[in-house]
Image 1: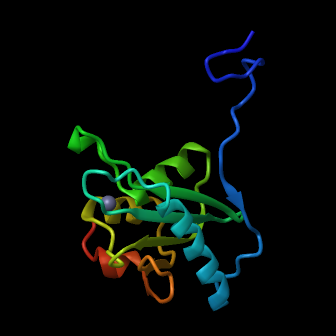
Image 2 (image 1 turned 180 degrees about the vertical axis):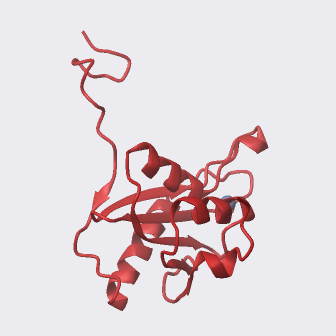
Length: 153
Ligand SMILES: [Zn+2]
């Protein structure tokens, strides 16, 4: 007999898709590019048929786990959620609370929206924010204090 999650053991935690990479050392450019490549993979999962603006995000946790996020749109527009918050909320839901960096990619290397800046401020702190276009060839590096100098709260 299986439960609605397809598991025969009701106490079994369903497998969560995530990537673990302890090799990422943010002192090295190639490792930053690696994190951006993960964001590009997340971008390929975007559900953005209304805006056609795909965003990908990869959040590097302190233990090396990388949590993906992509923007998910709905016909009920306010139910849409940005890639950054999808990744952050997923990571927090899985018990992660310490983060090393976040990478965000989109066609025009867009900066996070105001709501995401607030959540980054509250939950990620002063970690590097790497923003790249969809080619992943060059990126800019930011910290939240620059993107959101006057946060709420
Ligand atoms: Zn946002």
